[in-house]
Amino acid sequence: MKGTILTDGPCEIGCRASKSPLSGMQKPGRAAQGSRSTDRSGKNQRLRLGKICPTMNEFELIAQYFTRPARAGGAVRLGVGDDCAMLDVPPGETLAISTDMLVEGRHFFEGTDPEALGHKALAVNLSDLAAMGAAPLGFSLALALPAVDPGWLEGFARGLLALADAHGAQLIGGDTTRGPLNICITVYGSLPPQSALRRDGAHAGDEIWVSGTLGDARLGLEALQGKRLLDRALLRPASARLHRPEPRVGLGLALRRIAHAAIDVSDGLMGDLAHILERSRVGAVVDADALPCGEALSAQDEALRRAFALNGGDDYELCFTAAPRDASAVQAAAQAAGVRVTRIGTIVDGAGLQIIDADGQALDIAAQSFDHFSG
Ligand code: ADP
Ligand code: MG
Image 1 (tube, rainbow, N blue to C red):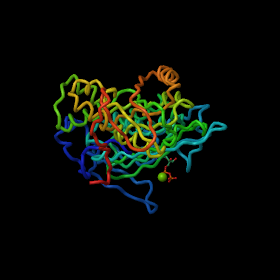
Image 2: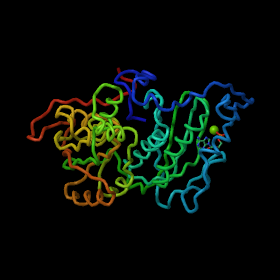
Image 3: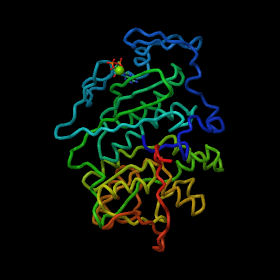
Image 4: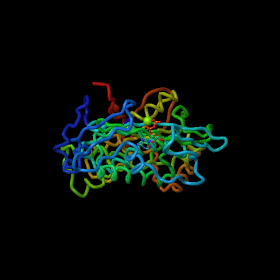
């Protein structure tokens, strides 16, 4: 997991959560008062819940919340319940795999709405498939839970599986254990290898595009952290962007054979575009004033608009490059996928990312991508 951060510095588990407006929500793990018994293999642990819920072991939990009837005709030959799942990859295609982890206190507030969390845990993973131009096949879920809390599990599974259904991705297996709340998803997709939207495919002369809008997730995060005041009318769209990102899977598929390079914007546009530039050995010029700001960010002053559009993070939009002659094909792909796209700059020979304003004047703005181990 790259994008979501709750702090600007080293990890502060549980930080500020009690002050956040989310703190009144249901907290996973409240029910963790019981004990567990273990057999010698360490399996079949009973997660006892005192008076809150009847005992439920690991397998009952998996059966109740994470097992659904197999869908006929899909890529999944064998799903949850055996030692391995089995996936069929369409003939001529190759498997695309990505893993992202969400840790409580690190990537989301303690007490975050479980349905939103289920959605987001899968959304950030599907976003990586989108950025590769891969079609989702299935995903696995490794889950550490402090306790079995049926209300939490129901909400989490609802958010997770609704997004899975929307993208035709089946839950095919996973692992479940007791521990501090931690959600790790691996997604499996497929694509013809030659049409992968890799980071190393950008050429000098390409136009740089971004989907949707930028910056509202960061604005929502800072408002929820109490760092910034936001009108109620703007807090709603901003926190929706933070908690319920929409992976641009359809756009990624539509950009196959059109885009030269792509990445999903999880750490902030500047930092993520820099990965394309490094891998493609090119430079870029980006117009800060051409960046599409989110609804809430659009109402802020120019300095904040530029800062959060360039370095906000958690946007889960696609940034991609394409030849200028393919601009109308890009627009048609975006229209087919129902997503807006905006041209924001150009790939140039050389190295590095230059930010300019609408008059073409250079702006002195540094990338501030989050690095979990720096500082
Ligand atoms: P094993 O001991 O072979 O690793 P487990 O006991 O961990 O198997 O899991 C039993 C079955 O349930 C496996 O098919 C596994 O993929 C699946 N499973 C475990 N946890 C989850 C989960 N959180 N979501 C979906 N499937 C799960
Ligand atoms: Mg296991």
